[in-house]
Image 1 (tube, rainbow, N blue to C red):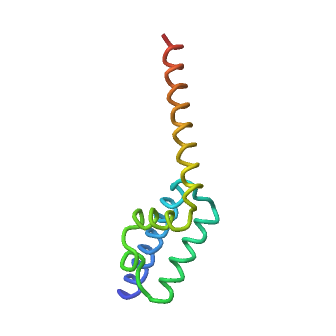
Image 2: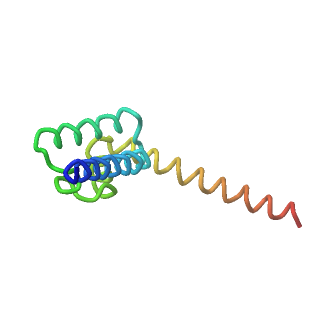
Image 3: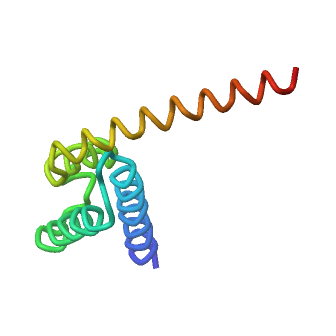
Length: 104
C-alpha cells in the first residue's frame, strides 16, 4: 500500500507543478490560450517520454513559464501587451485617486 501512496503523492506533486506552470504562463505578457495549451503539451510530452518529474526535468514552474513565454510569444506581441498593461494600471490608479477625492 505504501508504493500506491507514494505514486499518488508523486502524481499530485506533478499536477501541482503543472497547475502552477499553467497559471504563471497565462500571466505572462502576450500569452493566449493557444500558447498555454502548447506549453502544457510540450511539458506533458517531455515528461511522458522521459518519465521525469517536471521539476527535475524543467526546474521551477515560475521560471519555466517565463522561459516558455519568451520562446512561444512573438516579441512584438509581448511588448504590446506590456504597454497595454501599463496603460491599464495607470488608468486604474487615476480611478482610485478620483474615488478618494470624491469621498472627501
